[in-house]
Amino acid sequence: MATIGMWELLVILLIVLVIFGAGKLPQLGEGLGKAIRNFKRSYRESPREIEGEARSLDEAAPPGELPGRTAPTGAKSPRDKE
Image 1 (tube, rainbow, N blue to C red):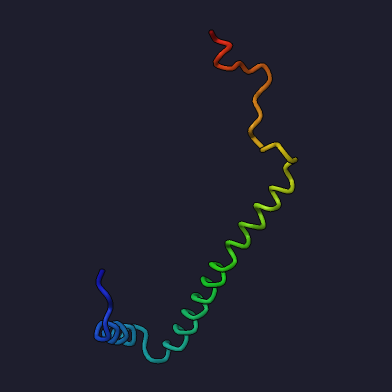
Image 2: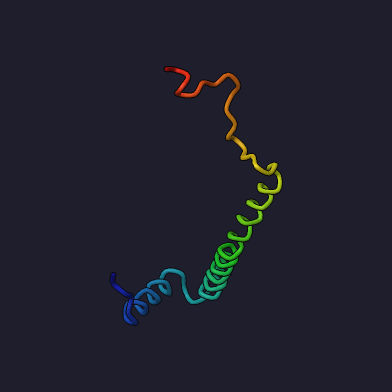
């Protein structure tokens, strides 16, 4: 996998400077910083949310029963066919 070196970063910065101008760079930096912070916060909070939902499902289900695992009444087992 190729890495981005110092010269590549300078070329990218120069292109961004030409496209957006020097006046817009602080706004772009601020927006990029907010986006990165939101992404990191979401990444940290998502396992907590998943664990919380799993706990609430465990508490809601009666012990010894799993939701969606009951057989319909009158169901025949494979042995009944013989």
